[in-house]
Image (cartoon, rainbow, N blue to C red; front, side, top):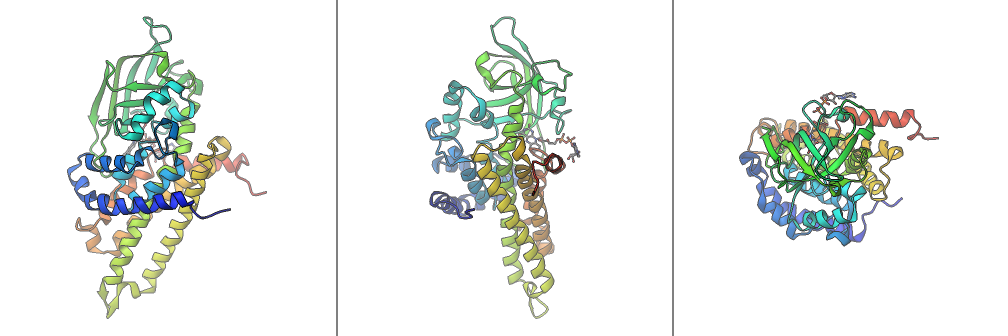
Length: 391
Ligand SMILES: Cc1cc2nc3c(=O)[nH]c(=O)nc-3n(C[C@H](O)[C@H](O)[C@H](O)COP(=O)(O)OP(=O)(O)OC[C@H]3O[C@@H](n4cnc5c(N)ncnc54)[C@H](O)[C@@H]3O)c2cc1C
C-alpha cells in the first residue's frame, strides 16, 4: 500500500492548485451570478493541458488517467463546482468511446476533447427514466435507406453541457422498446451538426450554474454503423462508463468539502466573541475535527477508486468500492458545506461569502450519476453477493 502520489501527480496537484487559486477562485461568484459559460476558464484549462488528462497519449491526451483527473478536479472544486464539472465532462461522454469505441472513433473524437477544440455531453437520462435507466424511451430503428445505419428519435434531459457540446454520447433502445433487458439498449455518437439534432429547453438550476443542463431533442436523426459505440445491445457499456466515473464525481465532493472546511476554519479563527475567538470553543473544534476525519476518509476511498478504475477494475466485482467513494464523498460535501455555512453564522447565509454557493452546489452531487440511494443499493448488493466480504 502506497499512500503517496507519484512525483508527476504531485506536480500536477501543485500546478492545478495554483491555477485554481489564480484563475478559478476569483471567477466563481460571477459565474454563479451570471450563469454564463466561463470560456476563459475553458481556455485556461486547455492551455494547461487539463482537458486531456484522462485521454491516452496516442489520442492527444497526457495519459494521467482517472487518478490524474481526480486530483485536478479536487483542486478546482475547492472554489467552483462549475469549473470542476467542465473537467469532468472530458471523461463522462468519452468514457464509453475509450472503453469500447473503435480505433476510428477514438482518432476522430478524442484529440479534439484533449486539445479543447471540441466538447461533448452524455445523454442517458430521460424525463421518465432517471435512476431507472432501462425505462428509457429514446429509440433507434434500422435505417431502411442505409446498410447498418440507424434512425434515432427521442428526448434526453438534464444533460450537462448540452448547449456547449459538439457531439453527444447517447443511449437508445435498439431492441423492443418496452424491454427491460440490457441488450435492448445501444450507445451512439451523435454529432451536434446532424440533421434532426437540437437543444431543447435549458434548466433553471439552483447551483452549478454556468454549465447548462437541459434537453437534447432527437428527431429522425440518421447515423451510420460507424456511430455505434461497442456492440449493438451493449448497454453494459453505460454501466462500465458510470462505474469508472465514480471517483471523478467523488473528487468534486472532496474538493468542495475541503474548500468549505478550510474557509470556515479560518473564519472562526478570526471571529472574536466572548473574549476569545469562536475557534476557541471545544464544541466548534470537535465539529472541525469530525469533518476533517470524514474528508480524509472520503479522499482515501476516492483515490483507491481512481486507482481501481485506472487498472481497468470497474466491472461488477469492484462496484462496491467505486460506489462507496461517490456516495461518501458527495454526502461529505453536503455535510461540510452545511457545517461551513453554520460556522459563519449570518455571514455564511449571505452572498458575501462562498458558503451559500457551496451549499447549493453540493446538493447536485448526491443526485447526479447515480443518486446516493442508488449507490447504497449497489454497495449492499456487493456485500450480499460477497463481492465485498472480509473473510
Ligand atoms: C444538475 C444535474 C446534471 C445532470 N447531468 C446529467 C447528464 O449530463 N447526463 C444524464 O444522462 N443525466 C444527468 N442528470 C440526471 C441524473 O443522472 C438523474 O437526475 C439521476 O440519475 C436520478 O434520476 P431522477 O432525477 O429521475 O430521480 P429518480 O430516479 O426519479 O429518483 C427519485 C428519488 O428516488 C430515489 N430512488 C430511485 N431509485 C431508487 C431505488 N432503487 N432505491 C432507493 N431509492 C431510489 C432516488 O435516490 C431519488 O432520491 C443530471 C441531473 C442534475 C440534477
